Length: 269
Length: 302
Image (tube, rainbow over all chains, first blue to last red; front, side):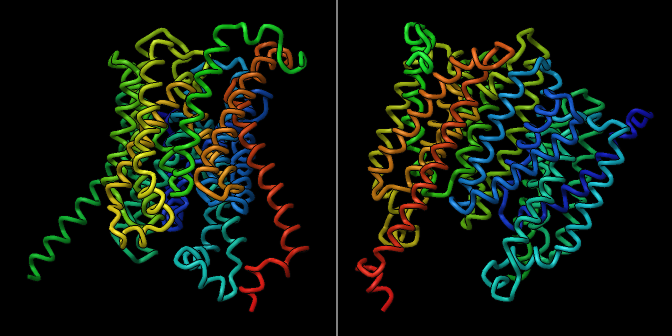
């Protein structure tokens, strides 16, 4: 499990989990779950396109994730945010389907992109992955307060002089970059699970932002570590473990919160 | 017309089935979609396709009829979303997301097992990207009956549904049972989406649910008008998409053609963009030239 070819999996998995956990915290706070679902699918289309014309897949992942993010931002002028995300999602998936139909790729490669592959990051890609992750991390650090503020109240933050449109676009870009990093490992369909499940659980545990953010990153890291290990041991796709564990974490925390709230209520009574 | 419609297109049996089936599914999707967009439940509408997909993959693993899998998966998913159910719209999306995440994990497992247990290749892509050209015609009667049932139920609950979609507070105060209406609609949505994803695949299911409805609501004055227009947009997109896909055999150098879903989605998106552009131009003309003659403006401006 810790042999040399698995080092990349653990290293990239750890970076991705911490980043996705942090981004996911804001996704949950801002209620942009649908965008978080649409953008990784854009990245998937990009990877399929890159494969078709024979360029570096990371380039395709990043550029199409960005296109999806800008598409959502641009069309939200014309439609409610959920409709904008839906239209961006189907456009990206349709492009992906067209790329796949034109290429002679065989199915396992496509399944790996959709459902994840623990060895999805090669050793030549690990450096760009680290650099992009650090960039996203720095972006989140700088945007921490404005993001938090505008998530809680859009009107108030606009009244106090924050440009919420710029913040939203910057956040979509960070979401796009981190999705592009996560897709090769976790899969286009499951990146979303990791971005929602652990942060949603973390938010139930604490209403203090910094603490909830910390919990979110830890849950995400734990989910991904257990998933990599189980995927290795049981030889099943990592996406299955990421998806189920994320949901199980949320349900477990929710049950725990409800039960302990009842116990507190009983003690007080 | 030969440049657009290839000779012999309509004589082709599978094309004709595709045109008929496509029209039926896009009709139901368009009408259900109008309410979905009004209620801001596009995310749930999309998530249910993926949940139905997990059901379909599970069914093909257990060798149950795929239709049962798609519908069962969809309805269980809708129930789960409703059970986690929360009041705020933001939190509702999170509940949808958690169910969607779990379902995607399950379909990853099922599809992997299907792929490794059978020699049939392309099962993943079939489930995901689906095609009207590969529909099993024996499920057709069931699809037709269930579609009719969905439309009938929607017709029966149209008043409370519309009322609660436009203003939940007012409807609640007027005695509409919001929870009941909401849950009934979720089940209808799950069935409609399950049917469309088995017939046309998961991408098109979302595209034809949201796209035509979003376009038609932009230019309609009533729910009836919006429904009709959405049906026109949806059926037009499906038919044009099928014709283009058939023709694309001659366009693409590889001589393999491009998938139907690609063309249908492109038509849906073009419709949306054109409707919005036209509306922007039109409303500009109204506000600029007739601004003083509009009674509502003079009243509001005072």
